[in-house]
Length: 155
Image (cartoon, rainbow, N blue to C red; front, side):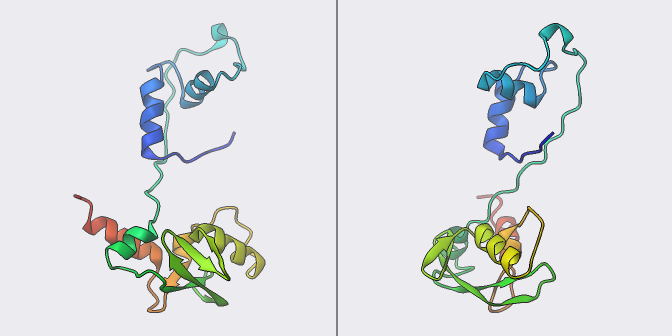
C-alpha cells in the first residue's frame, strides 16, 4: 500500500464526499474515480476502521517571504547537505517562488534533490527543499518560513 500527502483543501473535499462510518478514504477515492472494487460490496466490512491522515504542512512560499521582507528577490541561497554543511559551488537566486540556477528555474525541492543526489549521493526519495537552502547569514529557509507563519497566523 502506498501513502500520499494531501493538502487541507483536498482533505475537506474528500471528507465532504465520503460515506460516514462506511467508507475509508481509499473507498471514497475509488468511488469518485470510478475504479472497480477489489472485493464485492457484500464482502465489505461494516465496522468502522480508524483513519489517520498526516496533514501536509503549508508549502514554503519564497514570494511571501520576499514580499514580507524576510528575504529579497534575487537573494543568493546556498545548498546544505543532510549534515547541514554547505555543498561547494551550489548557489541559487530567488526568482518569485522558484530558484534560478545556471539560467533555469527550479523549485527549492527539485534543485536540492538534483544536487544532493548527484554530488552527495543522497539516496532518500524524500527531500524537503526548504530545509536544505540557507541564506548567506546561515539562516535556513525552512526556519524562516516557520517563523513567518507563527508571526502571521492570525492574518
